[in-house]
Amino acid sequence: MGIPPFLAGFDSSSGMLRANACFLRDEPFTAMGENKLLEIPIAATRLLPPRLREKVFIGSGATETISPKRMGRIDMEEVSRWVAEEYPRRRYPVVAVGSACGALTHLWTALGAPWLPQTFLIPVRQRVHPDDPGGAMFRGLEPGAELVRRNPEITLHHMHDANQDRMMVRALTYFRVKRLELGPTWERFLLDRLEPGGTIVVSECTTRWRTTRVGPRHVFQHGAMGGATEEEFHHGSPRVSEYLERYDSPVRRWYGPEPDGDSPEAEWGFEPALREDIERFARANGFRVRRVVFDHPEAPSPLVADLYRDWYARRSIPTNRLMVSSFILTEPRATLMAGAVPFWMKFNTEVSHRALRDYLDADHREPFDEIHLALFQNGVEAVGLTTIDEWRELLGRARRKGRFLGLRTRAHPRDLAHFARYDAALRRLRPRHPRPEPLTLEDVDDFLERSRKEDENRYPGVRFETLHEPVGSGSRGR
Image (cartoon, rainbow, N blue to C red; front, side, top):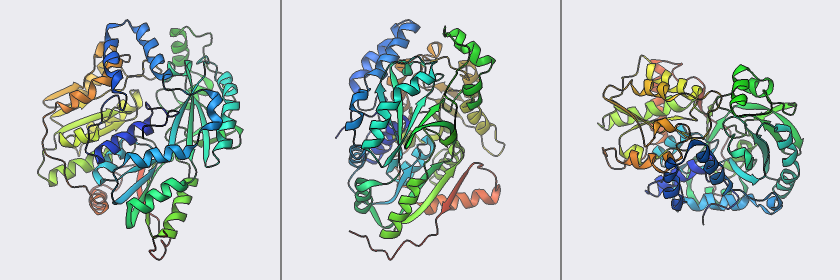
């Protein structure tokens, strides 16, 4: 069963899910995911001028859209069935559920654990001006109402980001849906695949964003996490004005619908109703529940990178190679086989640049001999975009070699061929070891305890918790 035709393959959740599933199947995860036929034409975009490349970028996104007239036919249980079928049919001691996070994708693969995402992207075929968020919200009212009416187990976050998604929103509307409950397919998956007495780990990103409620279980989010701040989306700034002028916009700031509350951030934030349903299910079936709670998507990145470095050292593997990935440009299997320490960034902007810089600058960390960087290309010179020279400066921190993986730097951020090149460049790194035995949660706990003894505040913004509610008599409840 392939990805449902109404889901975006270029999204964080679907990309990280497939990367995780490929790892558990012991298969490589290719840059273009399931659509390998696009690799050659995408690579050929390097021959095109920048503006024409932008049109190709828009067109590539448009190929994954669904008509707004079909919203009432979408059944989110079809998504659940696809997710379940992506994973090998065997028992797992751990299953993760919840927010997308590239760093935690590397944790799930290290644990040999499947991950069930809470949030998915449905790209709706609609043309709107990127700098008219009010018009975008209005166009999403009717199809959004149909989608939530058909699927009472979800909440809909209509997200409109005229900064980083400027190219895409010309052709499509971002409908991000969050599951409020496990549903019958995932409950069956957990009963069949999770070992008796096993652990469900809930991934919870607590990031929130101001939103406008437009209907039952339906909110509109103007802006998104990345280069521009939430304040800039709602009130403008000099750099927003310069950005809009550069793109020949008729406005110099965005005038969006007035927020009337806040909600879990559309792409990354966690909706707590799902945890409550997981706890109910776990109590009834004798499973344990743990939480990984983090303030923002990149908060777990230093912790997971250090965990891998510690893991390698205990297995007598060199710990001097760093692999930096961004957004969905990730390949956990090749990273692990190359003996690379994974550090994930959510995007290509100054916030992510700062996260990597702070990680490299920490006094308690040994420098890396090699730093390899896969830098996401979104086709937009967005507010907050970090320049290639600034990324080069961080690569220069490597004692021996720092390089971009498959990127034509002078084309940044429009090198679409990078999507068809970074994974091959990563796999060319000399493998250092075969695929190891998975880590256990006890291994993770031991690492966390040792880290706390050295510095209690080493990993701010992320915490691991065990929920102490009773988990029932141990009956599997079949």
